[in-house]
Amino acid sequence: MRPEGPSNLAVDKVSIHSRQKHSLLEAYLRVWTKNVGANWGSDAPSLDIYDLFAGSGWCVEKLYQQDEWPGTALVAAEQLREYPSRRRCLLYLNSWAEEEAERAALLEALQTRVKSIGYERKNRDVHYWSGPLAEVLPEALECHAERAQYPSLWVLDPYAGSDLPWNSVRQIASQVGTFRNRAGQIRSRRPELFINFMTSGLQENIHRQRLVTTVLGCSEAEWRTHLGTVRDEGGSILDALTTFYMQQIQAVYGRPPFVVPVQGKDGNPVSMLFLAVERDAAWHSIRRESIPYFVNWRAAKYEPRKEWVRARHRIDRSVPEGQRQTDLGEYPDLP
Ligand SMILES: C[S@@+](CC[C@H](N)C(=O)[O-])C[C@H]1O[C@@H](n2cnc3c(N)ncnc32)[C@H](O)[C@@H]1O
Image (tube, rainbow, N blue to C red; front, side, top):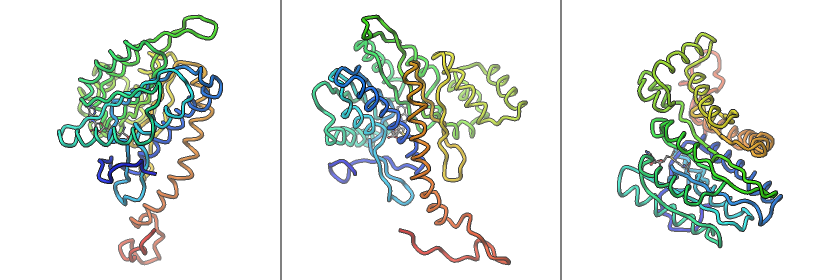
């Protein structure tokens, strides 16, 4: 249900497949709110969430405008609200657009919605910012360093791969925090990353070497060699992009990230979701719980929707012999 607030608040108009991304983020955060929360109760560790491409907090499916759901910022706010830890948790939201009026509308929508879901309670802080990544990142890293808290999750969900250079991802992943465990020992951990890696745009711009290598964080020669190897083994450009990004993350985290494809309605991947965690417990919980939840969600909610959208577009209908698709009449209006 849409949070209370004026009906003319800005929304993000998105494709139906983007719901998969929110589903996985929610399932991942449930590991915190349910599992960690159940084990530790109010003693659960603090959790800071940095959403650096936050949008308006609310998504509406753009084609038929019949589906709507919370965006990354609101998913994060709802889960942090539920998290039983009595420690201070920070929600850091950056929402930016080129146009000043759009920027103001996004921020207003975000603030109104986070407030209306009752996020604000004792030990739940929220920090709003509006700037392009290059400007917000130093500020967010400084904020993270000042809090010197572990753990943190960084949600990096750009429209285009080019908006997220590997150098920025590496800078975030390098912020190692320390904490004291139950036995009083000092432990160090890296931020966890939730990245929507926009492969479709990169595939279209694959000839723009400079752009591709900036996003992947390598030299042109390294990329060409990698692409050649993948092709020789029968792989595609998508395979090459995905495996290179995986390797980059694995080199920092010491274990491979989870990689989950987000498919458009034609079944082709639009983007790859990467979840990078260092802790054993987090890694196993995600594997056991979040990924199946995500897959089940897709089967239950996305598949019927896909059929519906396809029917509307008259794709995949059986055509009587001697006729063509275009000879068939319109489908009656679907609900
Ligand atoms: C895919 S949308 C994010 C949607 C949101 N995370 C959600 O799903 O609820 C990407 C957002 O990043 C903003 N944006 C575009 N370029 C950016 C940049 N260089 N730095 C920060 N934000 C940017 C866009 O205006 C847009 O609001």
